[in-house]
View 1: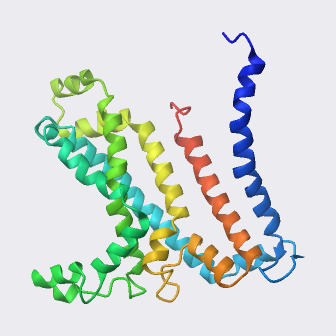
View 2: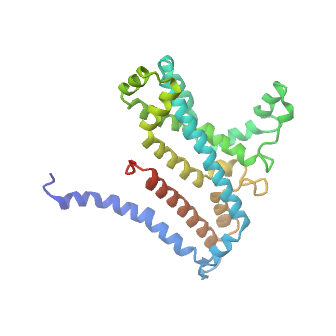
Length: 291
């Protein structure tokens, strides 16, 4: 097919060089730096795996890991689960003519800047002027009015809720595209066999979009373990360390505590977690597994 195979590889070379220089090389460099104790005002001192020993004894690390895990679990339930249900509903005949309106409404939050979203929800959650508490008081539920971001019990859940508000519509749109690719014959056959809407959803829609479910789950989990902006803008990991996640802890270690080697160790752990989760998902639920 190709008259000159060398020329084809030559065209691929710039992209490969770009990925190696700007992705793989920084990853290797980060691993190298994680074996040193150093700061912006000191020379590097080789300490072997001391940063990792310290990290695995650090209670803040486990708190951040727990918050990231919560973020991932809740995001899978709402963004992937609810996103799929919403997409299936929007593809129903009686809703289809209104689909452009709902599609736009649900998708719009995902195009807003994360910083803007963080500041917006800071105001919405404000215990004095925010509309969340005002709404609760208006319907007689003032006992549930709370300082959502100021309490260690609710701060991380309030931030996670914002993420669901922002990205459920984006995931829903991906499912909508996948559902529209399902042959109509499958739905017609299921309806002729007497299946109701719920049975059609679980026996036709879900199996036919399983590849998209894998993609959305992978995107959601990786995003949950890389989350930084919303947390930093809304609480900066507080109150105390209640809403700390791995990325904010890495930032705090590097640029507040000036512990670059320790921050490099945290960054490597984030890389390992996301890499392992992605590998396992593709291994056990990927397209190669047809069983």
